[in-house]
Amino acid sequence: MINEVSRDLFNKDKPVIIGVDHGFGNIKTAHTCFKTGVTVHSKEPTFKGGLLVCDGKYYTIGEGHKEFIADKMADRDYYILTLAAIGRELHIRSMDAARVHLAVGLPLTWVGEQKDRFKAYLLQNDSVDFTFRGVGYHVDFAGADVFPQGFAAVADKLGRFTGTNMLCDIGNGTMNIMYINERRPVSDRCYTEKFGTHQCTLAVRESVMRQFGKTVEDAVIERVLRYGTADIGGRYLAAIRETATDYVGQIFRRLREHEYDPELMKLYIVGGGGCLVRNFGTYDRDRVIINDDICATAKGYELLAERKLRRKGSVV
Image (cartoon, rainbow, N blue to C red; front, top):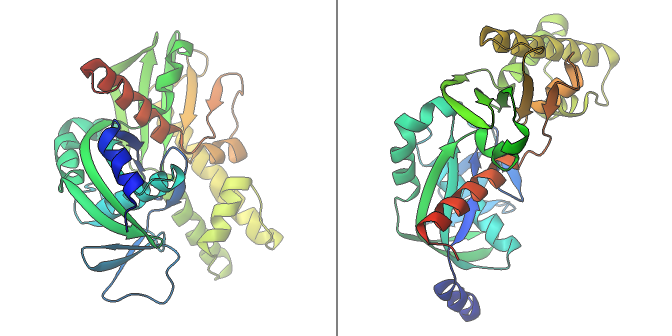
């Protein structure tokens, strides 16, 4: 049930800008991060920790792993995940009703082709009622903006990008590369490759199976990739670290294919893959800057959307 105070506030106030980073491994907002997993049920499930109910259907959020697809609009999953992201952000604000302006993104080289369709996909309903984690929400959509991934994460830091710079956004499904020269993005030097951290996870699984005939849980692999170690046998840890080191080496090889030269430019790394570079890479720490904030891109989307709305006079 929507309380009357909340309903009055959302009717009177300006739109709430909510940035959502629709990753293939995790959904990030400015304040939260959760797994990109959706399981649909025909009836209410027994365990309701991440339960979202919409249009009479039950969805468990954050379980499983969504398969990589280049078209995020191919099914309903990312729409449902967006509602969960909105629910999390409104809960932080102690709100259960709001006019929401979405700020989202797509891989650098996909924005031009998919932007309009992705915006229409997210705004397929003018308003929506749903329940998430036992709380009912009412949302009126005020609009949406779609920005380039990666660039959003450094939008508030462009003053530091003097000279020639390469920005590398390493996500779960893709790696996005952009040149930023003298504080300006170079539009014709943007690249997207299907070489995200999930490729490293797959390589680790294959390596451990080949060497030992064993399967390692993804949670264990993720812990090693994120922190460099885990409470497992030394031979398994060594195998995972060796594969991760090779993966990071491949990252730098791909960057060099796009003319990366550490003597001529600085490298800025954002996204979840930054921890792999930090833990398993060999690089000049004065020339390679790693942003560890996994929510940086979602925060950047909000910043860019607010600036855009201010220019239009929609935000005061």
